[in-house]
Amino acid sequence: MEDIHRRAIQSNFVSLVEQTDLDLMVTALYEKGVFSGEMIEKYKDTRLSVRDRKRQMYMAVMLRGPDAFRHLTDSLQEAGYWNLARDLDPDSSLHFRGPQPQPLSNGENSFISIRMKDKKADIETQKNAIDENGPLLISNSQEGADSQECEPDDNVPHFNVIKSTKFIEDEGTEFKLYKTRGPRNKRGVLLAFSYIKFQQGVDEHRSGADVDAKKLKYLFSELGFKVFSYLNLTKEKTQDTLKLLNQVLAGAECAFIVVSSHGYQRGGASDVEFRCHDGQLMGIYEFLEYFNNERLPALIGIPKVFIFQLCRGLLELPVLPAGGAGDGTHRDGTAGARAGAEGGDLPPAPAASLQPPHLRQPPARLYSDMLIAHSTLPGYVSRRDIRDGSWYIQTLCSVFAEHAHEYNVNELFTLVDIRLRKQFHVQTSAVEYWGFNKRLYLHPGLYET
Image (cartoon, rainbow, N blue to C red; front, side, top):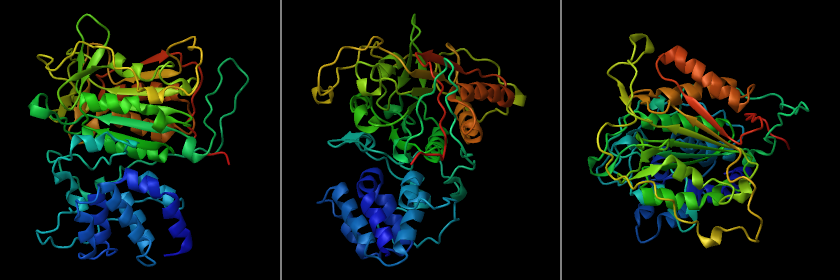
């Protein structure tokens, strides 16, 4: 392996260890001939932690010859870790290279083929949340046995994110700009909370939601964001993850937070609750409290964009044939009792260790710099296609890919609703502004040096 490639792995070693799945990466590297069947036996040794085994694996890759680096970046891409592949090899085109030959299974290998990863048994929920070192990035490939198989060319979503060629300048008017001109590693962070399956069958499996997760991961990687995905967390694990936000958001110029689940209108209130993996419900306002200026003073002045792909009630407009929907669409909410509801109790106080290092006066405004986008109107259902994903996320991804280089985020969400009407006819999105008083341009692919 060339020294420049070895240094690239060393520079990104922590990210590789913390953000990748051991089984997927070992399988991919085995299939590409980087490791032999005998060599991968050591990575099955459960006497060592998963993290230690990943450290051993990436150290071994650096000793595996001139083609190992290319195989590593290809494997990262195929597993969905586009941001890591790009960090290792900034010149990579990241185009899908087609299926690779598969070895015949001997029935003894505990690792799985990448093309069969959607048949993988359930990963323990806590692997999708946090450990003692803070939040982990979880691959959207860890979806459990109920996920539908995808053809190989579905591994990378088929849309092109147009890159910016120049920075938008402050025009000296009252409408100032949020700063998004820094280096690539500071541009932004995406936190994606996806709840697809539910314990004890308390709610319907959200077929197609995994497609949303893959599209969002690809889109925001192409926009230059760090992507942290959290799949099927219990309510407690969701709260634990939210308490550690400043560990993943520190230094970011902006943050996007997506919550995708079944949603339920709370009776007599404007709040909406979403279903967690264990069946318990969490209110949107409770979720948003973790992002206020008192809990996250370091993010005062930093734009925070929330996207809620949820039903907000049971009202349902007729689905017109021209909207392209039929028997393949589901709602992101289920009629009936709200099993597991906890009445919207206030979330626990953040851990003392995460308080600011010195006392400061509380901000004049508890909430600011927050844009909150909803896939549907209060009281109404939100539609999801089992093959192509939710109507709203489909539309959002296509609009952001085509126009993030030229329009600010407020304008992008307006275009999302325009296109949602043109394509699907019956669903109306909504946007709230909580002190979001500047223009936010994402400048995809453009960074100051």
